[in-house]
Image (tube, rainbow, N blue to C red):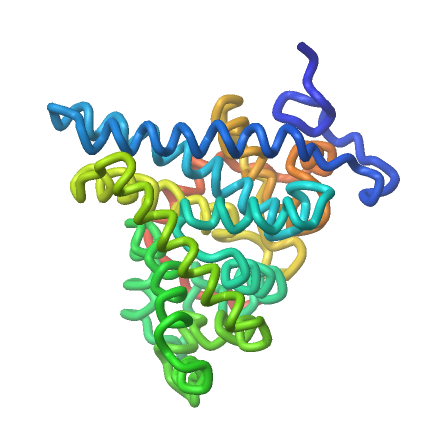
Amino acid sequence: MSLPAGAPGGRAGDTPMSTQALRIPGTLNVTLAALVLAANGALLYLASHASTWTGVLLAAAAFSYTNNTAYSLLHECVHRKFHVQPRINTWMGRLLAASLPTAFTFHRQCHLGHHRRNRTEVERFDYYAPEDNRLLKFVQWYGILTGLYWLLPPLGCLLVLLVPKRLLLGLASSRGSVVASHTSAEAMFDGVQDAPFGVMRLEILLSLALQAALWMALDLSLVGWAACYAAFAVNWSALQYADHAWSELDVRDGAWNLKVGRVVQYVFLNYHHHRAHHQHPEVPWIHLGDFVDPEADRPSFLSIYLSMWKGPRPLPQDK
């Protein structure tokens, strides 16, 4: 079977004239979502009912990849590229968000804010300036690498659900706070303040209900669930910044088109073509390969990831 243009293994550098005419693979996306959510459930069940630690760890390792496919599909929903029918796009986004877990509207506002702030001072986690708190920078950096960064979406959702809007936005405001500025908390909630809080809270309750239903239907154990999500947290968190670390400090071009193996490229639905995505956020995942410049620098994911463990770097003088 031949591959479509832009899919992993398709032709590279062949740029279409108009991104608006690119086909959204709605049927394929719905099918992939059904398969990957079923796989997530099966792996959570296996991890919870395995008789050996080897079984638990193998199921958790597999879950760390299948749930990244679910996240990649959620990412398509966030940019309204999952399906041509807006209602299907929204409801599939709500369903897929529960697998992170997060809530669709909350996550969408935060992610679109990331596109506006990319590589600016509030998201320049890989560099520290002379005035920065270096200890806080290093704690934040290794929090990303060890998977603690994954806790931010569910914790943010709980704050939106439980804390009154005015108080929440007041707490998020830095007012000169070093912690708020270093962690970009104020910037994150800045995008949320104009979102419909009622809708966000209902979606958060939906995600909680779906997680609870999964627990009861599959008789999950805390050990099995935690093992799967810990493995996913490390895998997901590493990618979220590996595709930006040490890249150009530019909102649009500040990302990498990372090189990975063909199977991984499939599993992540071209998510490693991240510079192409930031340059053309309206392009569906299946076409992103057409927007990767074959002559541009394309480091491997592994080289960037390993370099990240050396810690954040001093901000270059020319930055």
